[in-house]
Amino acid sequence: MENLMNVASYVYNRYFETKGERIDEMKLHKLLYFAQRESLIQTNKPLFAETFYGWKFGPILKEIRNAYKDNTFLHEIEEAVVCRIKSIMDKVFEEYADKDSWSLSRLTHGELAWKNSRKGIPDGANSDNPMDINDIAKDAERVRLRRAGLAKLGLI
Image (cartoon, rainbow, N blue to C red; front, side):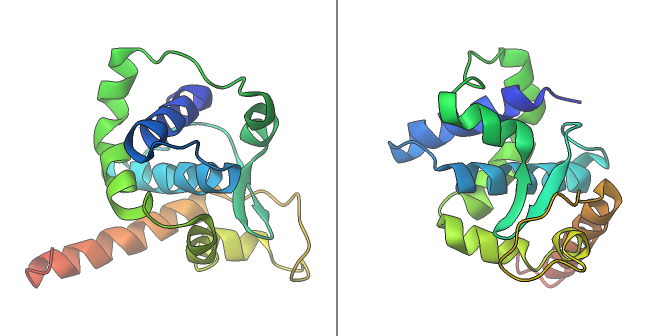
């Protein structure tokens, strides 16, 4: 598994290089969520060990929440790390980097993992309920099957 701060630095730096602006915190959380799910799609393994929490605007990582404010996650990333995560991150950036933060939030609200973490939580309230990695894996399998069906039809 990768170090979460390496992955977050990669996302932050790549976003800055391609978009010319600093990624906002909400978008960083959502791209990290989609990276975790994409890793499960491509490798059947999580990309990093940290747990997402089902907050009202979608998945968040508390480690990133704390580190974003003072940029403590930003550092040079070894080329070996970039090579290991490149195919995952290419797919995430291809599908999600151009969407705004609120659109990404709405997309995550359709995920089983987020919905299950929100059971019993009123709309508009944050929660410290963790998102189960097994639920994220179920979401990954759903996407994997959808992609296979679209490929079979020649649509991707």
